[in-house]
Length: 530
Picture (cartoon, helix red, strand yellow):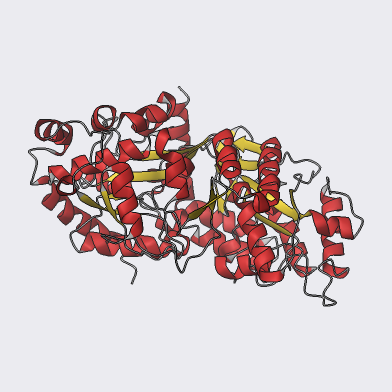
């Protein structure tokens, strides 16, 4: 069931009334917390009777939930001094999660700490349903407050939907380019091919992957490249044309000197024309627009895919699954962004990731203070290694005196939902984490992963729209959801529409709200650049 926006607004308004009745004014949440509690402690383990449970929602792609008394619950309680309960909420690209969260709002409840989606935090902030963190974080969660640079907090304040310059969400931060196109280096070597540097060379490599049986099974089942539903996770095909694309979501960058949505740029038109030809020639998986994550990842693991796009730092997981599913000890490398004459290619680097957390404006002050305590202790870097490792015997094991991560197993592992190391990410910390928590027999995977992460930095660029609030889309949900883009991009790629239809798409996009959204986006850009 998908709740329409008007229904959500009504539900949020009702929820806000319930929440705020416990306070004299929503802007006084800092004062209320200060008068009723002391700063979160980080000393000895708290007594059982002092533990406050809070409900946390975030990304879960199939792992077990965390319930009271479970192993991960006990781990968080001991390590962070707060009881964490995290029910399983289907993710499915964020769509199912948002629908379930909307149902939670409609029922008059919110989790104590949660990941917002698609700008929902703006409506919640306006209605007083989430806490004003401006004064709370410096006082009660200084570890978090100091981890985010001041210039980023300033942009968060500029994005305040109430117009008061307050902080209502905790941003995620990535201090390096996280993405890369991965190519099967062992396939290149087997076929005697060099790493492609230009688009023409890249096409010839994919043709060889298609025709020359690099997986050696005697069948013509190789998928040179591909992606997933809604033309997502094939960013390497757009990136060579200078299209700002973020995990398959068109984004905002400077085109002809003006902040512009990349989906309606001439660069996008050229990219779609190229990808359509690739599709016609069998150089990308014919099921690309049907694949969900499990299906596409399964094809990579089945030793069928020559080039895919993903987080560079998760290469080891793909290598592990490849060996587990097909017995092949593969070799991946970062694909140098193929050069296309007339275009300057790049992989999109957003220093700001979408809001990482918001806090319920809780009239239960113990719950509110427990949430702030959790944030403070979670963002204490001394805890990051432990939070990454998780529960011994479930997420990692000790081998030769060294903590070693166990293989990914969604059937037995509870979801490690508290992951500050990925929400405030640096290249050095992430690389070191991978190296220090892997067993010797898996270091071959880690070496490849770290090398790909380093190589990917050559092609990463922070886009001009970094940090833009979702409020620019307010009133235009179809623009925000890429409805028109998905329709036209999908049909152009599959050959149902000729490339000439792109101009029709741009005209429709502008008339259906694109002009207004662009105006807002450029006003925001002018404000933050002052």
